[in-house]
Image 1 (cartoon, helix red, strand yellow):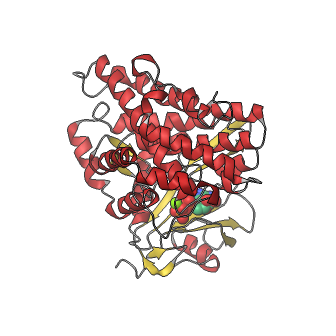
Image 2: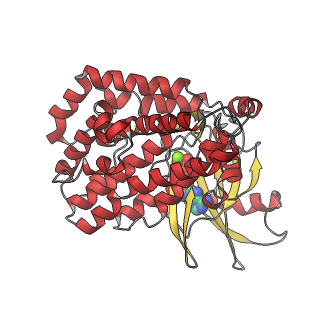
Image 3: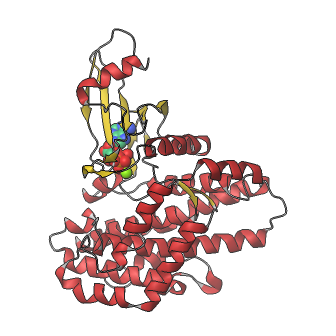
Length: 401
Ligand code: ADP
Ligand code: MG
């Protein structure tokens, strides 16, 4: 029964892997807890004899960071395992390999990624994106096309929607992303220099209307399978051999929802990383980061355009595709806007800004960018509403370009 599954500890993880038949009988190994996440526990186990390790992720029946006083259904681990299977079907290169799913323990075992680094951590340390945004845009494009009305039959989509309902985590998004940061709430905080701007944003009826539309889009649009939490903390990066390795982890928030959500959350991370590079006075790094908006969008649209000739519904025409992609861009901008408000004035702040010598000026620029993303999206499209990714990151450039 939910909540009564024994919890793993570092000391019991190897025995668990033996019990599941995931490591050779009689072998020994050592595990450590690596999870620094808010929600769940992650253990990495390596064989004492050497060789590749395994990672086990388990959802306790509460929120990890808050403890048993904050109960939450451990079913979320099964949501995540199902989402990883769906992502692996369409974007195997960027999806962690899952070896075992254990519904009794609300746990699953996956590829050890400890040789990789969380993207946000790498960016804070000065890393370049390299091909990361291209790979993420490609993943979002492939998964959303394949699960959209263009890529899947009505029956496939009905089955997908039925097995992707995720009301517990959707409620978290509705609260921490799509309402609390936009209101005066005790969980929120901001840099003291931003008090007036934050209050003005929260009091602005145009902002309220824009966020209302995003909330309704999140709750009612069943466009395609989305990751739901695709910020820079959900991407791991590194290199294996000569290749840049990218893995998109942690899709426990996955739902059938608006395609623009994932692009928007990732784009917000690009804006933060760009603002950080500007604040540090590194123009060359800022330029590399600013360009990620374009690379993300190009890889996303390329995946749709590549798959388009084989669409499941041949009635859909090229005009619809153009309009649809433009509307995805529009939504992505809005979701980037709320994510930036959350990171500057909500509960969960961005280390990109917080670890600057003086977070004030960069945070002010990001907040102003968030406002434009919410209420002046036309400024981020070229003539005829064509997406203009460079205009997004230009919002946080000291000279506006
Ligand atoms: P949560 O659901 O609690 O947010 P995450 O999936 O984000 O958990 O994982 C928490 C942390 O654990 C990650 O930031 C990463 O450092 C580490 N981690 C997650 N998956 C793996 C893995 N397969 N291999 C190694 N480390 C991992
Ligand atoms: Mg998480």
